[in-house]
Picture 1: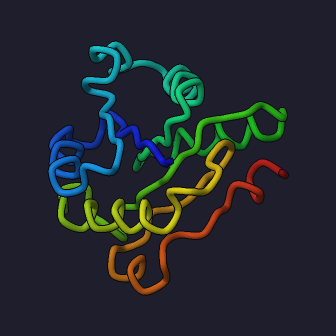
Picture 2: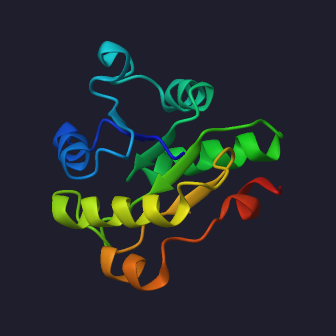
Length: 143
């Protein structure tokens, strides 16, 4: 299973629409997860809590999240899975493309082990053509 956690910079509407279109995909938003207790919290706290619940964080925030993951990986610490999106591939306000890409990722990778995994959400057209994104976790964590 690949339960998703949308970070606070992604509209909660994305989670609502994904759930409506694909009820088989477990998706939460930081906006409402644990009653919104993790909104505006430090990224390390969100990542640690996501790891405890085996959630995969979906975020555009490569600038701050990626260095944390690299540091934790180098230290040998287990971490939550993270799927990055990039606004040059999918605009954050392009809900249709995000829904398609998240659905393609789910279809391709839902049975995979996701602890310590980092991936990039592809454009939905390339995701459909290639069967999803490829794992990068071993490159970042040395595992």
